[in-house]
Image (cartoon, rainbow, N blue to C red; front, side):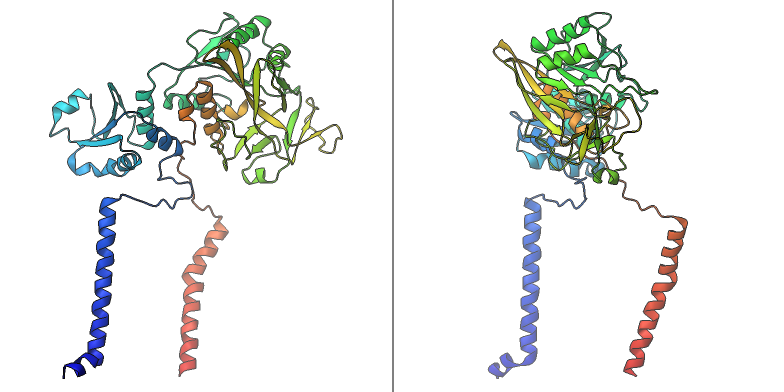
Amino acid sequence: MASEWLKARQTKYAAYVTVYILVVLAGVAVANILADRYNKSFDATSNKRYSLSDQTIKLVKGLKQDATITYFNQSMRFREGKDLLDQYANLSPRIKVQYVDPDKDPQLAREAGIRSLGTAVVRIGDRQEQAQSVTEEGITGALIRDLKTSVRTVCVVTGSGEHQLDDSERDGLSRFKNLLTKDSYETRTIDLIQKAEVPSDCTTLVIAGPTRNYEQPEVDAIKKYVEAGGRALFLLDPPLKLSHSEIADNDVLTSLLESWGVTMNKDLILDLNPVGQLFGLGPQVALVSSYSSQPIVSDMKGTATGFPLSRSIEIKSTDKTNIEKLFGSSSASLATSNLSSDRISVDDPKNKKGPLTIAAAGTYNTGKDNLQGRFVVVGSASWLANGYINLIGNSDLALNTINWLSSDEDLISIRPKAEENRSVTMTRAQLSFVGATCLFVLPLAVFLTGISVWWKRR
């Protein structure tokens, strides 16, 4: 009787169902145990919008001492910051996260200077910084300010038609200034015409596209600064001689760069690569996607940058300097020496064919231990201006350059990506077509398919 029961069909089906249920329950139990022990997530967005950036990962994993992030909010609202702060805690055992309810512990909130809910404070050792926002940008910025004990000042030269630091128009550098502030740099402008001397508190000097000639005393001041161990970024546009735009040759300044091993050619690069058209760029904007292994650009593989109105440069190391190429134009580019006409022939036999070097980085041997001058030269200035700095990877390149010049190599990386606008824009005709298809064509197709199936089966 027992053997017949075991062989019965109902018994087999019941056994199968029982085994399946046990397997499913076991799988769910294991998944819950793993989820409780390991906080892992998968970011399916195209630009990894909800993942921590390479800069943050590098910074956190390189911590030499413990850091505590304290999040102040009401207990019921801790979840608002928990997802982000847990990502920091999972990166390194040196990151500790605390959650404090100011209503329950007002004394601790008062000591931390908390004035509003939803505030995070980052403490490393004796230094404490309040995050400007509970975002990756805010938390990482507070970590940087805790780690950087010395003041780092970027000085932008003015007085000879350069791009202006506080100018919010298309040619201004106000967005560049905001990026520097978020990376905990102070900024100021200096006028070498009024006083031909670079202040000693300038960590990095920026010459951003002068349109008029520098005089010898100004250039001598820059030379003295770099050769004594200073850091400088030279952004020099081609000397165009158009009726609506004329840029001086600046021979005294370019002669200084040539003595260091960087020759600024008097030409204009035209990029004929059709890929640039996908970004809405014309041939006057050189699109770069290939970089050297120099620290400024080593992390930018796969990131494009654009350089409007670029000139080519030639480099060679000297007995005092070591020069490295950063990047150049594509093989589909060319350089014309016709700088006084809007009409340029791409078939002119005098044109130089690409690829052509656009930017280089160099070091100057001061003869002193642990003290070297550093300089970066780019044959374009407008890529740093408001109109282009948000173009693809330009902002990353700008900050990486300042980081290297300031000896902040630990900050060199790709910054958090802005949210992409992936909305679909349609014309009225396209919208009408989509509406008609959804409301009439598809339902009619389903109805006719059903009639067809019914007719065949009848």
